[in-house]
Image (cartoon, rainbow, N blue to C red; front, side):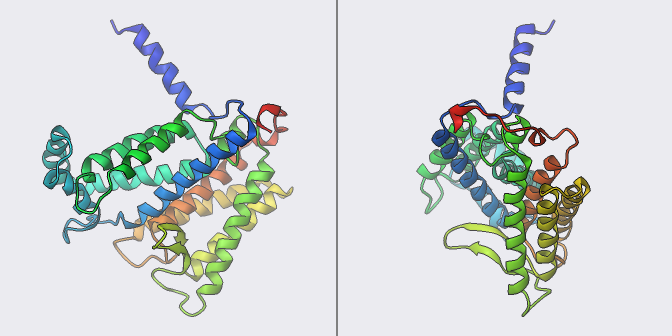
Length: 312
């Protein structure tokens, strides 16, 4: 018979991971945890841009393939090196897609504050895997990976979902109006910026965007069409949260999700019609997640926010 104690503990742990990360804490602590969460989300959002299908650098011996191969050429932990050499590298394309999905999921969940604890747990595992691959590689600073692991551990045991987060909506602590206007406003501004900057080359394969390679920060790149999609999505979100029809925000969720999926269907195979990267796709998915929760019939954010003074 299965150990019922272990099953109970497993269910308890899973329930804790999936519950909103919204325990009552002093307001400055909640804001600080949210800031760290968003910073980590931006880290993953930028880094998905160089996980490029279809072979993820295998033919050219660069990109994700090169960095994964360091686990074999510059081993950190022998059993992990064996796994990479014998189980990962021989089937690298499926592995590359798994990494892209995992890191996109991290970017989306951390930026939106949805299922924060689950995202943090995935972040610990992914950061550890990266460290075991590249910590001994040339020109690497191993402490950066210790810091990545530590930052995700902090988020795992924090109330990082209380501020500017979908978890706050799920727990009834945040109004849908506040979250919707923030994301809708940001998305509209990002789209308008991309549209204006795209006039010189409206169908560029990689349009302009808010990106700095020197600082390793990016909210994605969008050509004229990609920017227009952002503007439409952002306006729909703002309209819905200002008393407009709920169908508007549902339309925003569908449009943003389709935009992200279209990029992944094209990147590495043909020129993307939205002029974006995997980072752009992750941003579209982030907006889709927020809009989906704003448009839910039983939206927790439609209730009055909690008046828990411990977080104010």
